[in-house]
Length: 282
Image (cartoon, rainbow, N blue to C red; front, side, top):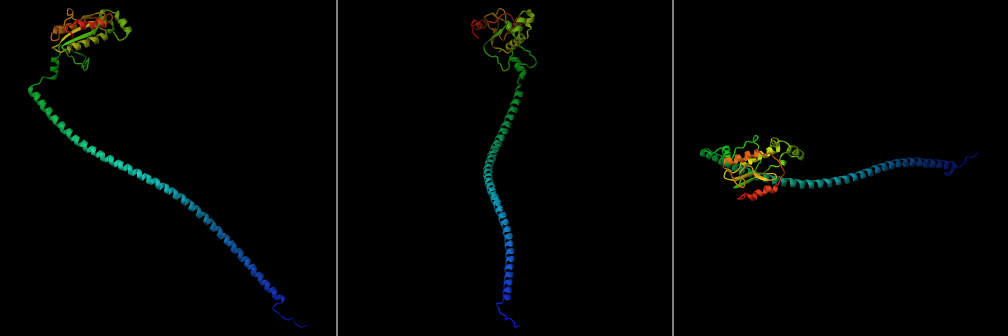
């Protein structure tokens, strides 16, 4: 049997060609799938990296805003601190000026004090040389009558007795028996000796004694008591002035006052009518 002729376009040749083409297509598909997968993975990674970078950018922008705000706040604080530092510097300069002035004044005061101390020593020496009288003796010589109180007690602190004619009016009514009305009524019905020893009346007697003892020696005086009527403490001296330099007048008036016992009501009209009756007037 004769053989077939071999031609380039036989069926077998076409099969081989199509098989090769299919293999190429299959290879292309496999390679394309791997490429797409790799590309997607790379894209996913790039996407994640992009998102991360965007977040970092946002965080960086927020940090930048906070940094700018902090910078502005810091600049304001710096301005305030500069102002405060300037005020502190000015205050320190003013204080230094005041301290320097006070130092000069202190030196001047010390010099003045030293001068006064020197003058005082000089006066003390002059006083010793002149044989000045002791203050206690001088004070005792100015009193018309010796007065002994309780310790160093002063009955009328700051009061200075002065004048040419001095009238002392003393309330001798029952109101001088005590501070309260109940005790006044109770003491009013007691004996004369009990009324004389009433604490309020004794304080009044000591006050009157102190006043008479501190009369100027060159003055005239009169001591009147009053309740419902006014009368002189020293009997027989009605309408007359007594002499503070006369010891009998001074002691007589004080001693006569101690013999009285408070009684009766209070009449200020009769008390002040004494002022009009005395001639010349106090």
